[in-house]
Length: 121
Image (cartoon, rainbow, N blue to C red):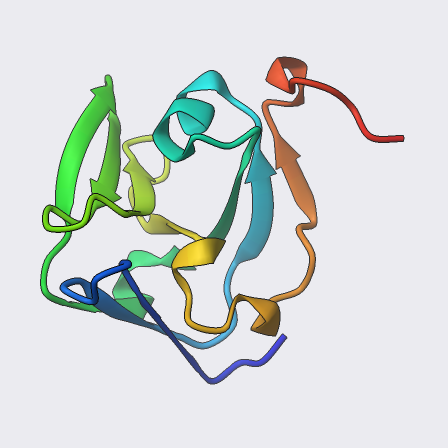
């Protein structure tokens, strides 16, 4: 995993971001809310301190539940990330929003495994 800057954007490019340095972690989340937000079986996040991410073109936020906001592009609808009151210093960006998602290591954490649709052994 590189420690330089990591660029990302929504599908149409109206929202762009730069994440500085190495992330805190790369994790898969299996909760039902993440499945609904992404349309996928689970979401993979790259977690950064909020002060390490700069946006050009602000993402919109949808409060999906108490203390949780989902970030997305108003123009194309692409999901960008997640921020929650439980981790006020962190910003969790969807790995697919990065221009070079292969720059990151494989996920090292699994969240809400009890909600997983299936388990891989």
